[in-house]
Amino acid sequence: MLNGERKIARPLRWGMVGGGRLGQVGYKHRTGALRDNTAYQLVAGAFDIDPERGKDFGINIGVDGNRCYPDYKTMFAEEALREDGVEVVSIATPNGTHYEICKAALGAGLHVICEKPLFFTSEEGEEIKDLAEKKGKIVGVTYGFSGNQMLLQMRAMIEQGKIGEIRVVDLQYTHGFNANDQADKTSDSQKWRVDPKVAGPSFVLGDLSTHTYYMSQLIMPHMKIKKLLCDRQSFVGSRAPLEDNAFVLMRYENGAVGRLWTSSINAGCMDGHRIRIVGSKASLEWWDSKPNELRYEVQGEPIQTLIRAMPYLDESCNADERLGALHQEGLSESWANIYLKFAIAIDAKNRNDEETLKNLVYPDIDAGLDGIRWIENCVRSADNGASWVEFENIKALLV
Image 1: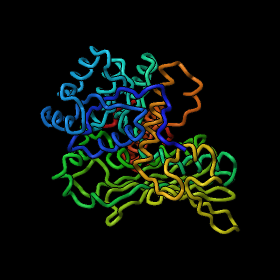
Image 2: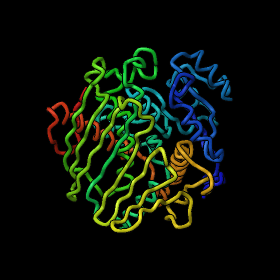
Image 3: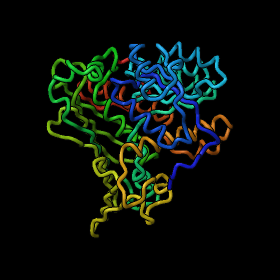
Image 4: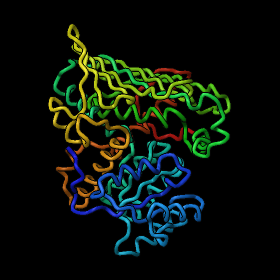
């Protein structure tokens, strides 16, 4: 159980790029990082493309006005001159800026925590991975749902053979908030998501399903995709060539099959985020709308609902719980869990503690790279007339 006691020697000096007043994700980053005030201290930021608005925002969340910078380049340069300068930076900006900001941050000697999808191409991802290794820095990816500890329970049960051999993987992340084009015209945070120059080669595949794809890989780390087929649609025509709905079929190397539905035009749906893993003996199912519960269905036996924080759960699962079984946890706790693991990874990297890094489960640069490859292969399949393609490490620009 986590109770806020320090896991590292001292809080990391932390800065943000983006995540200001008009952003959708900045508050999630801050509540995640600062939930355990022993892990991070927010000391600086370039919070907004509008410098004055960014400074006003930074002051209102308690950052020294002198350390609220007009842009990330100024922040990196000025903070490098301080003995108490930032050590790690979070990038909470539109997709098209991630690569250049991440590269600059690593060049300035900073650890990086970045929004997903990391970059447009796997070539960019490989370059950043090489640079991070050269600089001895961590690059983490904010797959914010992946800190839900019942996912680790699923991972443990699969490793223990509780469901037998995996046969079917059924994934869904859908909602209905973009069923029409109103937000495309009125919301700054939505406009860029449907602009290929800023969002990259996909909309919902990158914005939604990379979360679910990573979570499936977290749960089933040894399950690798051999082939996939992606069929994507732009039901709101102005979004083309970016999709607002997609179906992906998958064939895994062990013979299992999978499907994924991702959509932002699932009209009336408030939360269609679910993962079901079907084995030869039993099945496991988790819903984001009920994150404290895990459904365990053994063939021929009564259906079981496992509850977060109970002593019958695996130690790896309960190690991340915070509030006890009587109290509900959710997305804020999930973000806090991954941010704490980022901090542990950064601290271990600073101390050359490779053993801790080897055993720590969190969304790292390799997870981010895998997400890029997932999008590239889906786009390649869809643009080839929804044909089956080998799951490859593509390095061609797909925009």
